[in-house]
Image 1: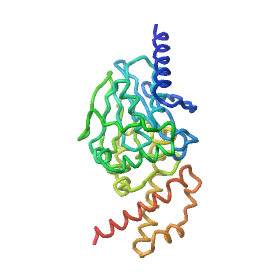
Image 2 (image 1 turned 135 degrees about the vertical axis):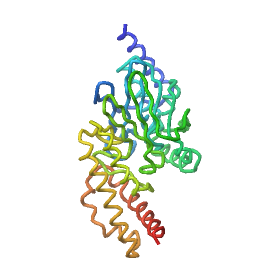
Image 3 (image 1 turned 30 degrees about the vertical axis):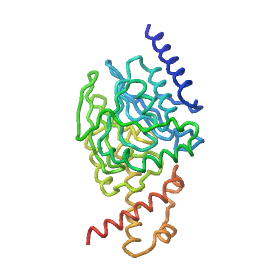
Image 4 (image 1 turned 60 degrees about the vertical axis):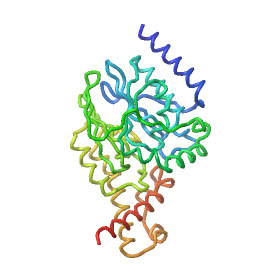
Length: 317
């Protein structure tokens, strides 16, 4: 009976995808990391037409009462594909999506989940992004870069529930702790710890195996909050990008070292009154230059950090 139910749900998902969203060739595979928890791993690097926008991770927790999802991938089509992956794994209803942060590669799949009846939760610090011009310009950029998977039917989804503090809840016999750690990678960063499985969904506070996207993030506070991830003593961290971390303390090193290097080099340039272009050209990027997403992200990261270090230098006077 369960196999028949799963087959019907899978066929339903395929039909919904065919009717509502552009098809994808990318195959999503559920990787099991604990008794209850799975994730799908996006391709390395930036979101492009070549990888059909599939460059971020999303996870899901299967309980006797239903499924809790963490993030929704970067296009409605990928969100629908993720639903199909979940349907192949369990016939339990998809109850809730927890959004670690409102960046394009993690949220455009939300509309597929909303249409499937899931309740969306996110931290209220994301209100400014949704209400501002940045979200609109990013959506337009994605339409141009990721057509047909992001198109005029793609919409920004407002959460059903805004979180304004750390929160814990019990669902299906499992305990979930939601911690707001922003501003770090973004103002609204949350992480989700599933106590029974000792698994932490770290969002983009930890990048695995690629250059992080920093942009205009508060890198000083980002570095500070990393220690809070380790205080939870997770066995595994499911990251926002890259393979799940089996050695969280070790794997935090890449993100920590990259942020520290940006701050050190750009901070020195600001202190020495060197222009950004000159500073960028003189900086030795060889340690990071062969990592995925370097070409797409590094100059933007460095410039954002340069401006941040200017701001910090003025605040210290």
